[in-house]
Image 1 (spheres, each protein chain N blue to C red):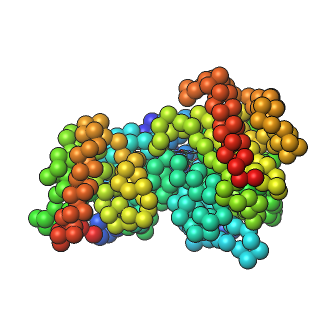
Image 2: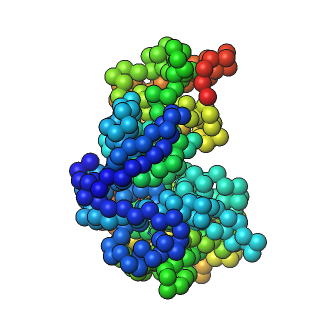
Image 3: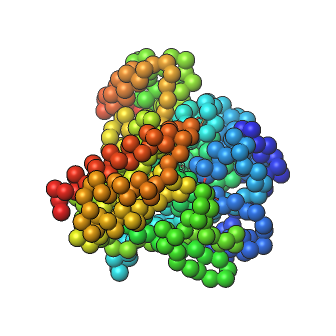
Length: 160
Length: 282
Ligand SMILES: Cc1cc2nc3c(=O)[nH]c(=O)nc-3n(C[C@H](O)[C@H](O)[C@H](O)COP(=O)(O)OP(=O)(O)OC[C@H]3O[C@@H](n4cnc5c(N)ncnc54)[C@H](O)[C@@H]3O)c2cc1C
Ligand code: FES
Ligand code: FES
């Protein structure tokens, strides 16, 4: 039976009618009209579905939507500010951090979270992104992008 | 997702009493803490359960890591790996727990997964259980009938089997004050790669004048303490003699992740590595 579940998505309240054990990933893509978050493996291995839930980085394919009731969910759709990209998005663009793009929304959310909470990955960027797989870039450009994002931020670019 | 989620029911209790009543009254309820095991089963349709109990409404009661005045540490049923890993008292006194949380999955898994879920799931490859065994962890099991304290070492009765009854929940892991200094402890996970790998062999051990602990994952149907090898080491056995005994305490198998032969080899190497490292600190 479907249930009415409410949470905030990128600062806006949303209410979805979902099966409570449906993973948050599908609720976002299909019920909340937010398909920016990607499906890769459906079981926690690839990180494509990474979102920020109550300020913590999670795989949305592993969160039953019932557990998102009342939560604050942040996805790739919420990062850009009007016409200005978030520093991490801008940096991925400039550094060639995205190729096919399937891993990119999740990778960027992990990058955003890392810049907010560097203390959660004492090993730095490689640790912060270790749950996010990329089949295309070989990671070097992603690491370069993360360096670039820090520069953009310290030069006063958008990002929080 | 291979499971048809439309067929699944879930209760979301708001209080501990409500949760325990549901466990008494509704048969076959599968608890969900972080869901990092349960959602994988659902994705693969490996599990026939249709009714679930999501514990997220009890976070205010059960999401804590608490250093008690009597020197014990309590880890609530909903405390995550990240909660454990970054807790100052855990860092200072229980370094094996920090290491095992650190090598579990990736940050996203550590932010959702719980040590209690790791125990209840009962995998012989559980990475946190060996650390908890070294620290003589106990589990608080609660039902409407009351509460009991069970030694983690007596919790598992066979492959994914344990002493919990269907009306109980694990509410807390209790760790006594540590017997060992950090330098007397050793953790080793051997998997296919550094992040997101299930262990082929996992080890946590400690040794001091106060005693010896050797705890292993993926070498038997459950995570185990090698009690006979511990006793031999306590009585002065050298590394070769200890290995002779350990070989008879373990029962590794061939499976998709590794072979029995490789696991034996790794177990021997880890035992020697541990004894060499600790030789310098005794
Ligand atoms: C990508 C990925 C990587 C992983 N890597 C590792 C790894 O490196 N090492 C490792 O050991 N594990 C790993 N795991 C497995 C999993 O994350 C851990 O076992 C975790 O501790 C499970 O905790 P949870 O709270 O998410 O459990 P859940 O999925 O919520 O529950 C697991 C089991 O415990 C039961 N349960 C939960 N809470 C209670 C309670 N209070 N009382 C009684 N029963 C309860 C549930 O019914 C279920 O049977 C990984 C999983 C994924 C998806
Ligand atoms: S789709 Fe969630 S981790 Fe791969
Ligand atoms: S850009 Fe293709 S998977 Fe990362």
